[in-house]
Length: 198
Image (cartoon, rainbow, N blue to C red):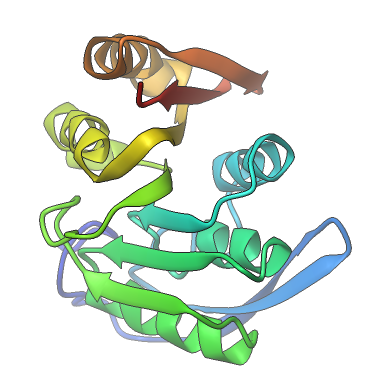
């Protein structure tokens, strides 16, 4: 059985196109079976994207567990001078993210395979993640702690997580790693958490 956090997808491919609209910017995104939230942009990703755009102006952004590129591409479209790196373990999702960057004419995008942040060697002023909850707490917490390593001084980690899917323990982990954590937004049980590297 393959999941959206599996490297290879056994489910048959059936690509379709969806729209993602935010602040008068519209993206046309190709999606497929075997990727996260294939039928439309999920509420958590949209909330994180909206919140970050109001809170920050990233120059170098890393999207961990990028899927087909929803959050990273929309943020890069808002900030055209942003260098965007997107990583995921899911090969099908990565291929879609590459296509979606080209299709939406978004430049300076680097899409590559990485289990969490294992293959990430550069540094960033901003890391975002809608972490793969179903992959388990250990995977989620590794993303949170490894983000510290790739952030510049004063760099910021933003995540979206539901209260019932581990928000309290994720918040505690971010506090441990960064010595600070802020709840930026709460909506429909989803929390946007932010930590700054001091």
